[in-house]
Length: 258
Length: 342
Image (cartoon, rainbow over the protein chains, first blue to last red):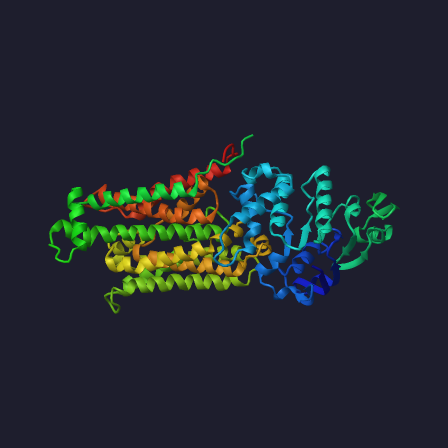
């Protein structure tokens, strides 16, 4: 499923726009990395993309359908979101937490079926945490919790995955594993958009990059064309020396003053 | 490191509570200011289903006094506990109670006004009606104030606290001016089931049943709601609709319960919380367990309330608070303590 934002304008408070004329397209079978400094509107954009927020202008199209015409349940069957944070004080096991991903597939009188149990178990296994299924969510490590939430998103069986800093609680090995997973999911035909802070590792796995700064798209396209010295320096307000090696990795040095 | 929760399966908790409730019913039918032998209780119950029932004192005590009171205790206890569960999920706060949005203080104010007006220009039967209306009005006002807030749950809580305080101030003022009727009013405010009759049972039954049915329907969405407003929207829950449904059910159940029995504290707070510790947060098991747990607790407390100082009665609201407050404190310190086992 292709997801496309057209000329989005969004403000939480009138006069303080967070998104200004943002257009983004994410194609099926690709991983798109969304870069940008803190507070530039990345999470807000994600929330517009799945219809949680209603932009003041512009629209989001899922294939040809306006995402705002979907009910929350319909949206959740098509678009799965991995949030930055999940409350940890819920007395759920990892399995129960992942099972919430199945909610959108139940009808109004819906009950859990054996199929659901199988899908959840498979999702947990895919994240390498099948053995944690019966453990208490609150007592897992940050990385383990993050993988439970990712398993929940997999259990949603949505064609579009929106990941909001999915690697934030993961060590470097688990980060790489996560990028590989995103890659595999996109190879299966899913549409993956990932908010990233990691300008070094992410380009190895991303087909496309979008750089957002101050609520506007500063640059979009192949990672190599987006993460240029000039763009990075402008977006983050830092000094950057970047030497690309091929299309997927680079050496870089950053300084705090431009 | 052992992190597997030591939870008890829902079916065992529900079965145990059901057995406890039945045993308790037997005890509650037998004990009281006139103590009855089991055979007399059985006779009385048998008389109830027979067409040509002889009317003896034991039968009258059982059928006219104890049975409606027991049923009302069960229905109100279940209603308050389910209301508490709805509140704790709605606010994602395990220390919330069904009174938190001010419904109880509104209903109490309505009842106090009703009692003062009754006899003067209102029939006494108008008191529960007035009380329900006032309770629902408060919920409505709280909702209107909270509606515009971006964090609905948060705004609801704050508006509830403010309006609650306002209502209780008006109630206190009314009490100050109540003069000779003060005793009646205070006794009512403390909460109790001594006035229970079949009409009350007839009013509470559909409310509790409706509350149970609706929450059963909402249980899967309530599970999702625990992860917060944003994430539950992302997982497919119509958040605002769920919140309004929970608030509505909570308001109706609590307002009707308070109008019939006064303000009975702690049941709605303690029962769902204790059961959550025992069986985890899955609402599909937590809901029937809470309903039964509330019924057991209120029936036990009410049976004590009418027997410990017989023939005098202790308002059951005092008993539930006396027992409930230490439990609450225990929960609080347990919550703050580092957790070794679940």
